Length: 124
Image 1: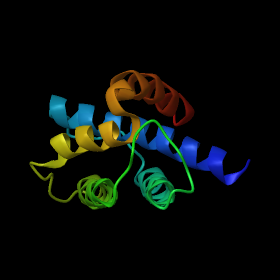
Image 2: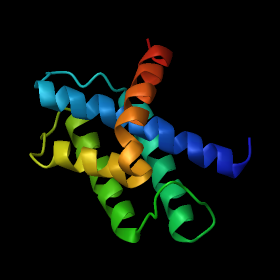
Image 3: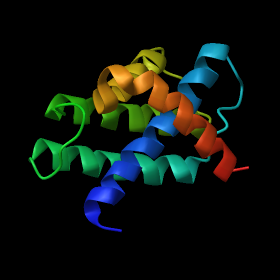
Protein backbone atom coordinates (compact mmCIF):
# COMPACT_ATOMS: atom_id res chain seq x y z
CA UNK A 1 0.00 0.00 0.00
CA UNK A 2 1.45 3.36 -0.95
CA UNK A 3 1.26 6.52 1.15
CA UNK A 4 -1.68 7.91 -0.81
CA UNK A 5 -3.77 4.81 -0.15
CA UNK A 6 -2.68 4.75 3.48
CA UNK A 7 -3.62 8.41 3.95
CA UNK A 8 -7.03 7.92 2.34
CA UNK A 9 -7.67 4.91 4.60
CA UNK A 10 -6.64 6.95 7.66
CA UNK A 11 -9.15 9.66 6.77
CA UNK A 12 -11.96 7.16 6.25
CA UNK A 13 -11.25 5.30 9.50
CA UNK A 14 -11.01 8.60 11.37
CA UNK A 15 -14.48 9.59 10.19
CA UNK A 16 -15.79 6.23 11.40
CA UNK A 17 -14.31 6.64 14.88
CA UNK A 18 -15.33 10.28 15.09
CA UNK A 19 -18.89 9.35 14.10
CA UNK A 20 -19.08 6.65 16.79
CA UNK A 21 -17.81 9.13 19.38
CA UNK A 22 -20.19 11.90 18.25
CA UNK A 23 -23.20 9.57 18.27
CA UNK A 24 -22.36 8.35 21.78
CA UNK A 25 -22.11 11.95 22.98
CA UNK A 26 -25.43 12.87 21.33
CA UNK A 27 -27.16 9.92 23.02
CA UNK A 28 -25.50 10.64 26.37
CA UNK A 29 -23.95 7.16 26.51
CA UNK A 30 -21.72 6.38 29.46
CA UNK A 31 -19.38 4.40 27.17
CA UNK A 32 -18.07 5.66 23.84
CA UNK A 33 -17.47 2.21 22.29
CA UNK A 34 -14.15 3.35 20.82
CA UNK A 35 -10.94 1.58 21.72
CA UNK A 36 -8.55 4.25 23.07
CA UNK A 37 -5.51 2.82 21.28
CA UNK A 38 -7.41 2.66 17.97
CA UNK A 39 -8.44 6.30 18.53
CA UNK A 40 -4.85 7.38 19.22
CA UNK A 41 -3.40 5.58 16.21
CA UNK A 42 -6.12 6.68 13.81
CA UNK A 43 -6.11 10.30 14.92
CA UNK A 44 -2.31 10.55 14.65
CA UNK A 45 -2.54 9.06 11.15
CA UNK A 46 -5.30 11.41 10.02
CA UNK A 47 -3.41 14.44 11.35
CA UNK A 48 -0.40 13.37 9.28
CA UNK A 49 -2.58 12.83 6.20
CA UNK A 50 -4.18 16.24 6.64
CA UNK A 51 -0.77 17.91 6.79
CA UNK A 52 0.10 16.15 3.54
CA UNK A 53 -2.97 17.88 2.04
CA UNK A 54 -1.87 21.23 3.45
CA UNK A 55 1.59 20.80 1.89
CA UNK A 56 0.07 19.87 -1.48
CA UNK A 57 1.33 16.28 -1.53
CA UNK A 58 -2.19 14.82 -1.39
CA UNK A 59 -5.46 15.80 -2.99
CA UNK A 60 -8.90 15.17 -1.58
CA UNK A 61 -12.53 16.17 -1.80
CA UNK A 62 -11.89 19.30 0.27
CA UNK A 63 -9.17 21.91 0.64
CA UNK A 64 -7.75 21.16 4.06
CA UNK A 65 -6.22 24.11 5.90
CA UNK A 66 -3.89 24.42 8.85
CA UNK A 67 -6.97 25.49 10.85
CA UNK A 68 -8.64 22.18 9.98
CA UNK A 69 -5.57 20.31 11.21
CA UNK A 70 -5.55 22.32 14.44
CA UNK A 71 -9.24 21.50 15.00
CA UNK A 72 -8.52 17.80 14.38
CA UNK A 73 -5.67 17.94 16.92
CA UNK A 74 -8.03 19.53 19.43
CA UNK A 75 -10.61 16.82 18.75
CA UNK A 76 -7.89 14.21 19.18
CA UNK A 77 -6.93 15.63 22.59
CA UNK A 78 -10.51 16.11 23.81
CA UNK A 79 -11.52 12.67 22.58
CA UNK A 80 -8.51 11.08 24.27
CA UNK A 81 -9.39 12.76 27.56
CA UNK A 82 -13.01 11.63 27.34
CA UNK A 83 -12.04 8.07 26.38
CA UNK A 84 -9.74 7.84 29.38
CA UNK A 85 -12.58 8.79 31.71
CA UNK A 86 -11.78 12.48 31.89
CA UNK A 87 -13.90 15.47 31.08
CA UNK A 88 -16.36 15.41 28.21
CA UNK A 89 -15.89 18.86 26.85
CA UNK A 90 -19.09 20.63 25.80
CA UNK A 91 -17.43 21.48 22.47
CA UNK A 92 -16.63 17.84 21.63
CA UNK A 93 -19.79 17.06 19.64
CA UNK A 94 -19.76 20.19 17.46
CA UNK A 95 -16.02 19.84 16.93
CA UNK A 96 -16.47 16.23 15.83
CA UNK A 97 -19.05 17.22 13.22
CA UNK A 98 -16.86 20.02 11.92
CA UNK A 99 -13.84 17.75 11.64
CA UNK A 100 -15.76 15.13 9.65
CA UNK A 101 -16.96 17.86 7.31
CA UNK A 102 -13.42 19.21 6.87
CA UNK A 103 -12.34 15.82 5.53
CA UNK A 104 -15.21 15.03 3.17
CA UNK A 105 -17.20 18.22 2.62
CA UNK A 106 -20.92 17.87 2.01
CA UNK A 107 -20.58 14.08 1.59
CA UNK A 108 -19.37 13.56 5.17
CA UNK A 109 -22.67 12.19 6.54
CA UNK A 110 -22.91 9.38 3.99
CA UNK A 111 -19.24 8.45 4.36
CA UNK A 112 -19.49 8.58 8.16
CA UNK A 113 -22.52 6.26 8.20
CA UNK A 114 -20.86 3.74 5.88
CA UNK A 115 -17.56 3.83 7.71
CA UNK A 116 -19.09 3.62 11.19
CA UNK A 117 -20.61 0.24 10.33
CA UNK A 118 -17.30 -1.02 8.96
CA UNK A 119 -15.28 0.18 11.94
CA UNK A 120 -17.74 -1.39 14.39
CA UNK A 121 -17.61 -4.69 12.48
CA UNK A 122 -13.82 -5.00 12.60
CA UNK A 123 -13.68 -4.26 16.34
CA UNK A 124 -16.38 -6.67 17.49
